[in-house]
Length: 154
Image (cartoon, rainbow, N blue to C red; front, side, top):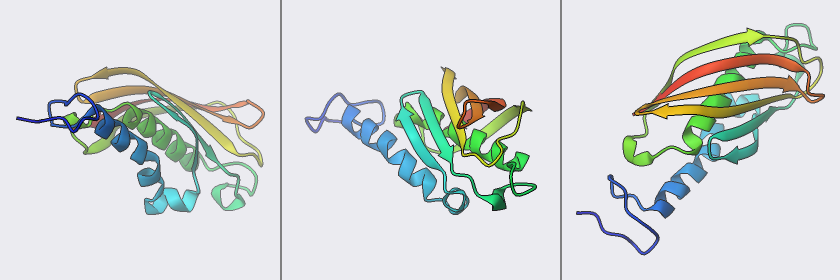
């Protein structure tokens, strides 16, 4: 039987509310320490429950032509921002193994020599699946892409 450490209620896996919050709070640093995301130099602008914004600083090596992001880079940032939103309010008693199940991207424009801003919000959580909507824009607010993502944490 799980006991509390005085920091809050205990969940099914023996995690207190404080431990859950600490684990959620560790997600940004853990994500950004992975080799690919560290190389991209992604940054969190906001990390709130079910609501995340990330910034990709402009670098010519991430573009097709020195000015406009490669579509794969945009997709990677959309995917990462959606995943971060999924983790931002996750119940760690349900597990900590994750992957993107599916993602559909619609490109609507190009961010010319601009940072890329991506905002994700969780639409629904059902058992181990998390559904997110993600938008990408340039720093002037012009749309670049929209995505819907299904993320799984077990």
